[in-house]
Image (cartoon, rainbow, N blue to C red; front, side, top):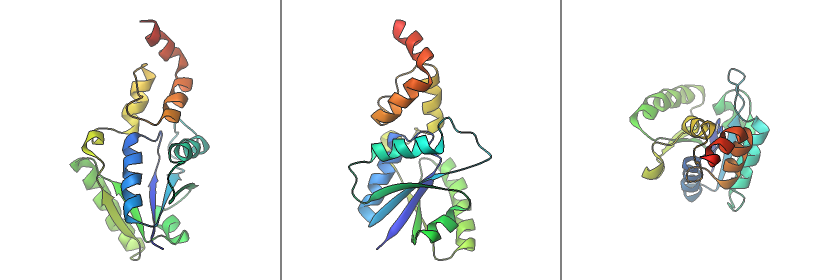
Length: 167
């Protein structure tokens, strides 16, 4: 079985992330979407909330599961018996960072490959920070995130949404 992991903060998961998951599903037997626990960062959503939103967003996907981890991504991949790490590339700026990480991961574990996947071009500008900012100011995020994420963002920013809805 060819298993890969798709690690990230997913704070929150976007349609761009979902698109990368779909593309990885076509290439591998199993995709494990794995939410990183980063003690240096305080996320908008807890790790448990992010896992739940991803699980709900991919509930119809047969060869995908979700987990979370602490520590080095490459070590988590090894612990799951994965052959590789999926990384989404939107722009050249992503490539520079991801290239460095891929080389470091190769030094740490030569058996784990990094596989770069480009999302559909309609998602190349999309990231979680943009979504959080749009939601914070009451903007419509429905075209950019799964329904459960839109709902959770509305709950987080209910006051801003009610101000926007009154306009």
